[in-house]
Image 1 (cartoon, one colour):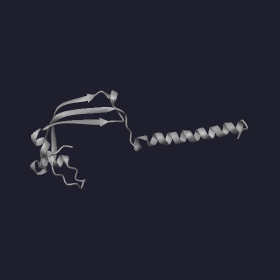
Image 2: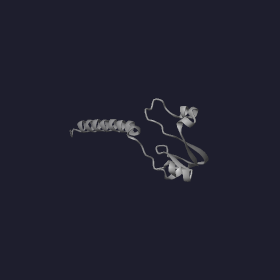
Image 3: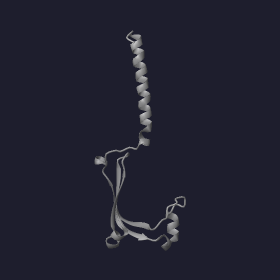
Length: 112
């Protein structure tokens, strides 16, 4: 959690942006400043989505001083339900096929 008060005394920030399914992580180090949207209307127009009804109180700008793509070795893949839906559907189809084939074998062997 970062407040504007925090960056007023120390503007250094570090962000970790992680893509768990692809085991990828970008580390950004930089300096942040807060800017009122009306202080730079052109920038605000580029950053604020007019379709979003939320009121934007401030723009947070980061001057990136360094970045690094971290090694994926220790990033555990995580998936959303939407990511896994095709896998679940395929598994259900294979289980149904397996049950049908098992029943057919039992019928052919006379054990059904």
